[in-house]
Amino acid sequence: MEQATLGGGCFWCLEPIYDALRGVVDVVSGYSGGHVPHPTYEQVCTGRTGHAEVVQITFDPAVITYRELLEVFFTIHDPTTLNRQGADVGPQYRSVIFYHSPEQRATAEDVIAELERQGVWDDPIVTELAPFEVFYPAEDYHQQYFERNPFQGYCRVVIAPKVAKFRQKYLARLKG
Image 1: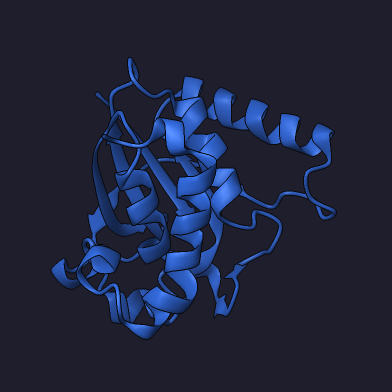
Image 2: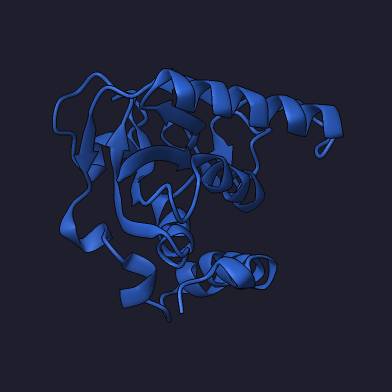
């Protein structure tokens, strides 16, 4: 098994998408990239801890590759907005890839370069690449948030459409 740590805005939006992919064994919402040990959600929300909301994905590389995880990543959030995803604003919502190895870094650099060459977005990709250092799981009430709260307003208006779009695009890669 391998791990990937990705931040693309609110972790509530990323978790249900990666959880649905065949080859993904576990997805945990949490915090990474900051200077405050064991931060709370309230601390991270201030934008002053340096942490990003991330998901830590445990996956079987024989079933789904790191490159495939990144290809999904770049279709489920806007990597061209600095410290922002939709209405969520602040460094905790930045687009970031915390690589766990030199190979992951090289793959991320290749994927970003390919997307830039293809001109997928009008604006340049601002996704931060940083070495993975430490991951802090978010509080229990954040785990499987969308699954447990499908009728909550944010889930219905923001997350559900993202999940539906993802499922349509990646139907062949979904768990059975």
